[in-house]
Length: 317
Ligand code: FUB
Image (cartoon, rainbow, N blue to C red; front, side, top):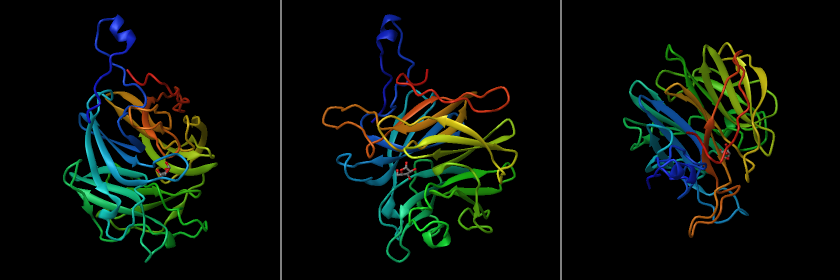
């Protein structure tokens, strides 16, 4: 389960251990929808878990996985932290999630499919004292349900939660498919504090993520379909957002892309998924429903604009 450092031909030639991560970073299972959390000297990486038998069906995702690293190259697997049906009101579909830490607790916001009492996709929230769990449903019911938003007839338009915590503790939940939305959360992290707001950015598909660098707020999101990643910037987490363009092109061999962005030990990283994992023994090749997390560097222009990501096979050093 531990991703060991690989020895590349170049590294062998240099008679030194490899310091390349290689993409995708995890090869013995399929991982999707990365959500990274920097916590002291550790990066926690939470992913969905693609288990579709082939690439002709649909997503088959039952649980979420955790990995950790102190150098972004060597990753330790911690196994599943939670299953979709750990939410008693949910029926599988362990889609995209986001972990945040607040007041010493780990809060896990995630997409699931609600049971027949509130049809459609929903957002649940679970909590733990540890980044590896055990996590338990923090609310006992969904935080966001499909009937709370009416901008589209789709029942999957309330997916892909991403949480941003301001320095003063104010907390915002971003989410949505086709229509990007956010809502403030109360201090208890399990109740909405006000109305759901619609965000005005172009080409939106899904997978919102907020980060901040040098007092600029950045909103990245999957755009178009097949998905690229687009970005926008603002002086405030509440917007308005100024569109910046495309950040990442279509990720190989899958229509989805799903990014997270972090700064760790002074370097900026773009974490996403591709369908590009080759067959590994009995494990078939990757694809649209068998995705794998990859990591590349993220760079900024002097004026704060984001430079387009260069996806690599070699990964980061
Ligand atoms: O993994 C299932 C869905 O595919 C996610 O919720 C979306 O972001 C897309 O990656």
